[in-house]
Image 1: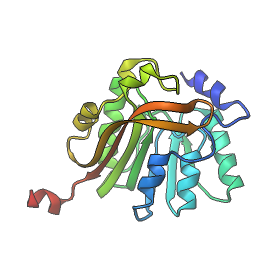
Image 2: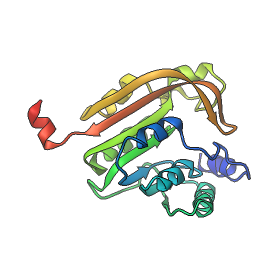
Image 3: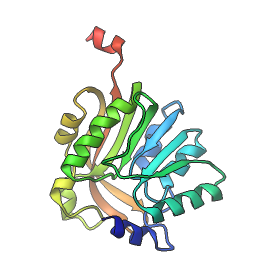
Image 4: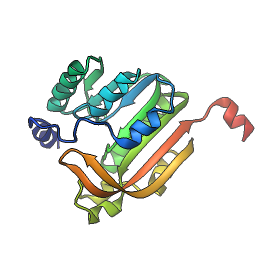
Amino acid sequence: MQQFWNERYGQQEMAYGLEPNDFLREQLHVLKPGRLLLPAEGEGRNAVFAAKQGWDVLAFDYSEAGQVKALALAAQQSVSIDYRLADAGSFTLEPESVDAVALVYAHLPAPVRLGLHSKVQKWLKPGGVVILEAFHPKQLGYTSGGPKDKTMLYTADLLEQDFAGMEIKVLEEQEVVLHEGVYHSGPGFVTRLVAAKTTIETIQTK
């Protein structure tokens, strides 16, 4: 798969466009900027947008071609991002060190997904949030992109289980129209999540 992504990101054209994901844009606008982690960030469109909004951005991906394009985009937009080459299964971070994590089409095999979603909750500061958009299994009936392996597509029930220790603020499955470059274009079906890491005070009042 690493070779697949290096080939896709190695093209001159931005595979998923220059604009950030719409749901991420919407959610970041209502949050106070802090430190944001972007796993599987690809060519950097979301990282660069967040940096322009005042976020301290840490991103990673295992595609060298993606990193090259992301850093070039950041330079073009006159922002700085910390973009590391790492695999989702092995990436590590200090506990309670980020204010938000954005998982934008971070489709992973089940064992890797479970591990990353568990670690994300440890990396978040109390009150920190996860923002996630991914394709739903119904996406297999659409032609607008995404994995063809049903086990790598996410339902609301699956995400509710993965983030059971968090306060779910948004959890929805819906049809959308995608305008994200040549590989995410047209009608699609997605699952969206916003969840907050509970604080001691929140736990005590429940």
